[in-house]
Length: 178
Image (cartoon, rainbow, N blue to C red; front, side, top):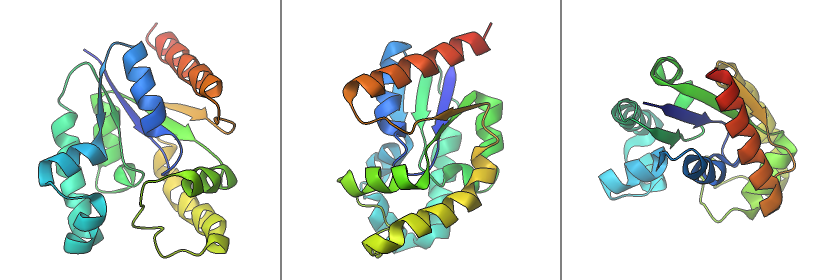
């Protein structure tokens, strides 16, 4: 029985890495945000608008507690999931946590290129993005740094770089279980 939780700031590559890593490790893949959207039949943005951040974080916590009981699974969490309630402790007890780390400039570039709407960034002007990410990431890193594995991912643009990242994380996970 194996459970791996990928955590990190939005845009760090949790879903991209997660899908490939789950396939490589023969695990089921769950994107926590997609899981919530499927259960509520609403987008994360709609849930944020309707319930506010506190209401959304409670929904997210319940979803996390549910999937934390699944077996042979790799779970990609939302960027804020580790930072609320005792979610980080829940994940560390239930399985292996991997912090996918990237610098603010890299995160901003990835988020600009992304087609996904991020409620927390929707009203930010381009020149506000890097300072906002830097400050927000500084607040969240105290939670992210509780991960059992911290893996930096700056320079993950090409398919080859993504493939190398997935292989390197798989190797770290394998070496950890020895």
